[in-house]
Image 1 (spheres, chains in turn red, orange):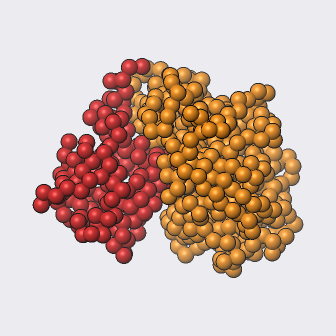
Image 2 (cartoon, helix red, strand yellow):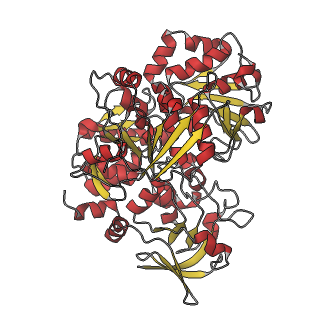
Image 3 (tube, rainbow over the protein chains, first blue to last red):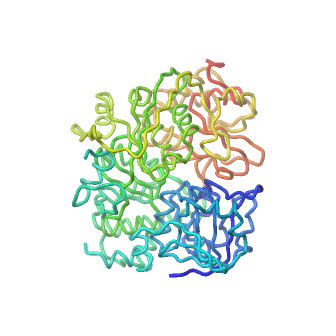
Amino acid sequence: MKIKGRVFLLTDKNGDLIKDIDTDQIYHNAYLHITDINEMGKYALGNLEGYENFPELVKENDILIAGHNFGAGSSRQQAVDCFRALKVGAIIAPSFGAIYRRNAINSAFPIIECPGIEEYIEKGLLKHGEQIELDFEDGVILKEDGTTLPCKKPSPVQIDIFKAGGLFEYGKTVSS
Amino acid sequence: MGKTIVEKILSRHTSSEVNPGEIVWIEIDVKSARDFGGPNVVKHYQKHYGDTPVADKNSTFFTFDLVAPPKTRKYAENQAVCREFARKHGIRVYDVDAGIGSHVLMEEGFILPGKTAVGTDSHYNIVGAIGAFGQGMGDVDITFVFKTGKTWFEVPETVKIELKGSYEFPVSAKDLVLRVLKEIKTDFALGKAIEFYGDPVENLPLYERITFLSMVTEMGGIIGFIPFTDRTIDEVKKFTGKEEIEVIYADEDAVYRDVKTIDITGLKSQIAAPPHPHNVHDVDQLKGEKVDAVYIGSCTNGRTEDFHDAYRIIKGKKVHPGTILVIAPATKRVYRELMLDGTLQGFFEAGAVIMNPSCAGCAEGHVGMIGKGEVSLNTSNRNFPGKQGKGKTFLVSPAVAAASAITGKITPPEEVL
């Protein structure tokens, strides 16, 4: 499966990918009473300094790129669902918070671990706004000029759940 | 090849011996949802499983510990949705009076050493303090576990941290864990299980093991364990109300992904400044900064002895005018103990606001918000920007919190003892 979209970098004022973005910055606890996914998009990254207007800036299929330990913190599913609501294409980071990672996998939302991503950006190989393709199953970024930037391949269970369309559907396919 | 503690517990909950990196299906002994996440679980459940029964109603719970009692219509409705689902399925609700779910389910003897437990609470791994495997999970996961009694899990690698040195009151396990966070940040243990060894942790009483291990979440870890001593075994039996408990130790030839030694000699009171729990300093370095609010409680420092530690500092003194001190016991049991032994009255006389058992100032929607430019000192576990309102949240021990409440500024507890 290939995800085609625009690079959306989450960087600080020095241009470095922001590390340890916590779920309270992704989806603030003030909105945890919301259970309808369609209402969640407007709060995405609303508490991350410099990205308060993210829902207006982001476009469908955008591929978000963030720093180490993206989604640290709470177990709230809304921190994944707010990006699904905005139809974000995928998230790439060197690593994810453990619970966040599971929540994304279980929702069939594509996330890719990419240990080399900071280096790619430092070297100018990936720029904000650039069109790319993400080969999800192989964990590879394909640039328009034909070059490729390798990331980590998703685990087999991540691919299986993704293909099934989420944990509920996947659960039906495995024997009890 | 030997096994680590997490590998042993997971092996007992699946059909075969597990190894790090493997994806396994594990049986979940206890599952719960809170008033955050709970209504989402009900919604998913009804959509995917209709009116069919849960896997095991006797080990499935709701615990309302966040907006407790509810203060807005929406939260009240969300709790009502969970209660109705619980009635229909015969599930027990620990309602708004009970306190913090993870603590309540240990006190009630449901989560026990060697068991597996999951809930919509990222600090559910706190149950590592009693030798159980616990994991916070999102509402999709929890719905699936309610229905099937199991979930997939990637067996984590285990890292080992050996601590050396010693310290004395008013320095505490909170200072110790902040010191460890300062050292390893989220780099060393992200996605790993952690086993802690050495006198500074092995000598900890149970309430301080809870404090210490609750912040494995802030290290990015899956779960942390400290090997039981005879004292721990006695304390865990008393805590859970069980006469016999299972005690699991790592094998001598267990395999660790990495080992780190941290020498804490000379440890002083610590403080984590925004924007991260690992942004840790000696309290001395920040002393004198004005404090507008102090919150003592949370799953990290909400046990009876935590309030005793704070009260040792505050006894006979008054909260500084213009500073708000809020305290919230973790559970009803803690509240009762503090009421019976006079601690609550002491806090009242000192000028504290005494809340019902709950997560209190850890989330918006309950007490303990601060305004722009204000500073709050919390004994909780997170200080990310905006967590508690527009002000700045610092993380400290109960002793530092109490000392600073008295002076109205960040204060090393030695200065007011």
